[in-house]
Image 1 (tube, rainbow, N blue to C red):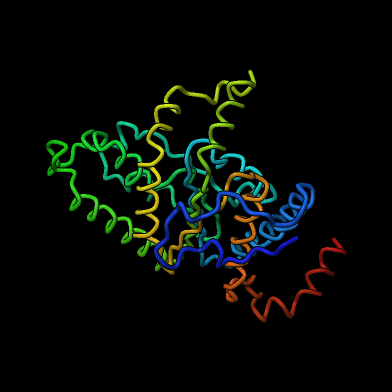
Image 2 (image 1 turned 60 degrees about the vertical axis):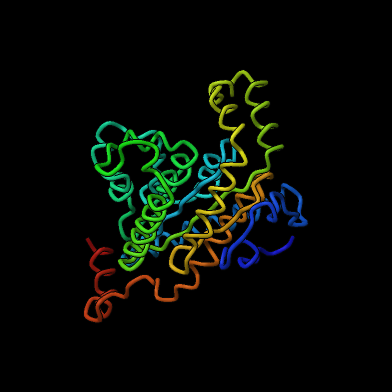
Length: 292
């Protein structure tokens, strides 16, 4: 089975999404890929324990993609072997009334992982330059003081919002959060097949919404906005990775391998050593317990 090369997915220069594959061949069977994922996620789970003991870094995993891209199942499979207290998942949906009374980044700030933990954003702060860019009328619901109508939501507005997002990410990175941003790159044809499966399987019908078909008609516009967002905001401290997502097992393994390989570069993430005085007394402590 082919090894994952991070450089094949990491965005370090401007890209065009239509040039990126939505499926890759790792030259392994589905069984082999699932076994490889199991091995990788077990190591990731152990690494999270060390991250917690070390206590100086948090890890933020951001997942974006079109409907049916496989975000939910990826979270389930990649983080299956983590201590449940070591990873917190947040799914960001339509803002609540309370969230609208704050700036759009507030709900993401308060959901950030603590040092020693993984946080997963299922849909992220980028919804505020993706969905709202495709549907600018949503911005009017934020009741911003300098936005009175759609004419105020112009290029300058979006430039300012991108700068705010970049500042947000730079700030949290400087304070110990390791950021991963994954775009699950799904083909339009594969999305069609997955939507049909939802309709054909009664136990999956609940996942379907007629609105999915309306958004599908805006596919090209979404791809334009994703491409622009990725190119504007991929940075060394907060890189984007474009993950071929037509095959779910391959996408899950790719994400897990990128997480592991990148985190293993942090050589300072180690379990703290006991104080010399306590370490010297370990045998004494053992003896006391044995002779209780």
